[in-house]
Amino acid sequence: MTATASQPLHRVKVSGDAAYTIDIGPGLLADAEHVAVHLRGRHALIVSDGHVAPLYADALERTLRAARPTLSLARYVLPPGEHEKTLARFGECLDALARLGATRDATVLALGGGVVGDLAGFAAACWMRGVDVVQLPTTLLAMVDSSVGGKTAVDLPSGKNLVGAFHPPRAVIADTATLRSLPARELRAGLAEVVKYGAIFDESFLSWLEAHAADLLGGDDATLAQAIARSCGYKADVVARDPYERGDRALLNFGHTFGHAIETEQGYAGATGDGLNHGEAVAVGMVLAARLSAELGMADAADTQRLRSLLERLGLPTTIPAGLSPDALLARMRLDKKADASGLRFILWDRAGLARIVSGVADEAVLSMLASG
Image (cartoon, rainbow, N blue to C red; front, side):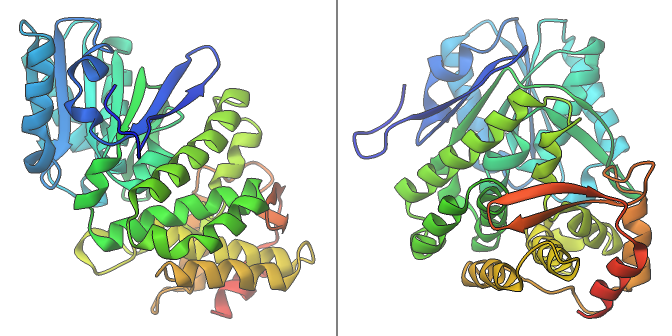
């Protein structure tokens, strides 16, 4: 396996009925045996987007062909951006599998960020009722969150990730060398999801992030790899316990009920710079969840300030963007997947490192908090 003495390979195992490994380290996309070992059949489709494909798709194709000369290989490249994670693009991906003649032992290779991973994974879940997907995340956010756990989906105009399926990957291969080409804004967005793990599971990890904030922002390879491995470890543990999000796995949605509402209300405009991207929206959402926890008397306001300070040190927004109506955001939250028969359901916390699921929060409490900024 490709690794160096200074940057060893990190491996996280996800247990359960569909067990798989998450490998984290530099140079993994160039390791022919490491990637190709996960391909069972003779057909493979690389799914990527217009930003990532020019950087890595040719090299990945060479890697695969070197290991599997008889492989029937094709690509589907969609335009970049959350607004492209649609049923129409999903249909195009299925058409690409049809043109390839992909059989039941085909593999979909999701090369890119969360949009690519979600859409490619959903296509793999649906093609012939399910073929393998190997997640090859190239953004920090995808490495620590969307590539792990098997949640796949596309968006509708009325809400984010409303159409999808649970489809665990055959493997996750996180080549940390790809982070060197990541725009600074996207690196910061990924750090929001890293912070989330400390906020909901482990206060000591939050302290570690506070101590290493400068190295993380500076893109230090070893520090980022450690942050990714620790984040994946937390997620692997909860996914193994609750693969279909019927219990503790919902804790991973800390900040997401608010964040998804912001993204949807802004029309997924983060890719164009006219709105918040996913990680930025989650950063704001986590602060809102912490504030709501404090206003409901569950937590100390000092914990909210600690979270806000760390996110701001990492260059992330912490307040609702101007022009968004509290009533409109509340309406978006009512359609969120995390709502249930008792009404709005939030992931709140008792303190840093200890989150829980809270159902039946009154609309008035949410509106009051949103209106206060």
